[in-house]
Length: 154
Ligand SMILES: [Zn+2]
Ligand SMILES: [Zn+2]
Image (cartoon, rainbow, N blue to C red; front, side):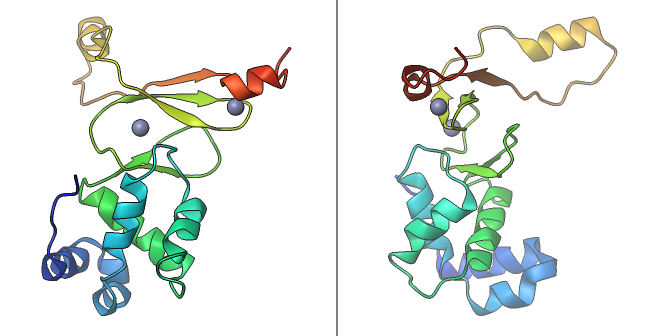
């Protein structure tokens, strides 16, 4: 379920968060909800281009720049995640909760690995180093079933 966000609230948050694009954002905060809804409706961890194609079906005049800006704002608001993957294109996740991912080296598909932390990496890192640990990133790499069937890396 989408959390209800009121349009005026989004307008205010946008202006406060993205000072660089405040003017552009303040004039048109409306697309943020369709962008959020489309991203929450898929589990494919799409890139901005793909989300643009989905949102354009409903808002034919929206620009890729507007979609991108709204994705940046939504990730700053904690409504979505921007994935720090090794792939070339930035990918987005409609699920803002911490979870792990597995990425195919053949087609760059990304799936969720909804496991609980199997090893407490942060505790281990704190034990092994003098660092103050503030978080961690983990990405599992592999070959997806489709690419396996096509003989990728055989
Ligand atoms: Zn694949
Ligand atoms: Zn995910």
